[in-house]
Image (cartoon, rainbow, N blue to C red; front, side, top):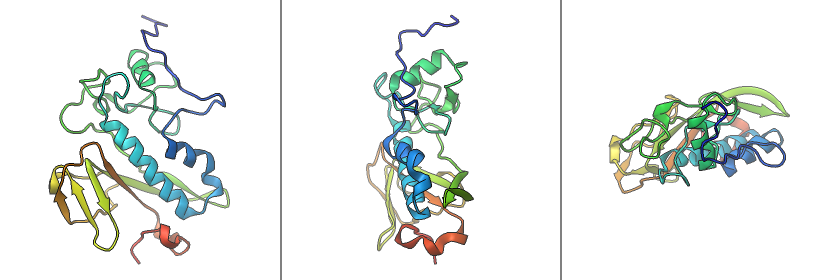
Length: 207
């Protein structure tokens, strides 16, 4: 009933009052204003990969998935917190991605099958000298691992069958191999081309 926490002990924040989220995401959150644009995008891609991979986890209470987000749109990392939010959806700290973001099998939502409908962020601020200068979007391939090196390709559990979610303008390698990659994600963010020149090797923007 009202005010009933159920049996869960949620942890929303650390001792400094910052949301308990995946490592790459909290590094980006706390340090992005001090980083060059290339490093910001690089870390945000890794952050989205961590959140995406969390969304694929489904071992009941310890790793029930990712449905509920902090105020910055990042997955709460504690399973207890995710499950508490199911029982206490009106708690203002529980920002809900929707029932289809959570697994039915863990009690977190309604999703079944290979993936949930979790999506990466598609409007992310890019900063220069501490000020927002533009926005960019991200996309992820689930149950896949991609390489953008000499021969760009993706190894995916469903081969060519998997479609990316998120920003539709983000392009992934078209060469796909069917390899078991369950639980892995490959995420890519496409920054506005106006600042690709100072991106250096981080940019991975087509010249």
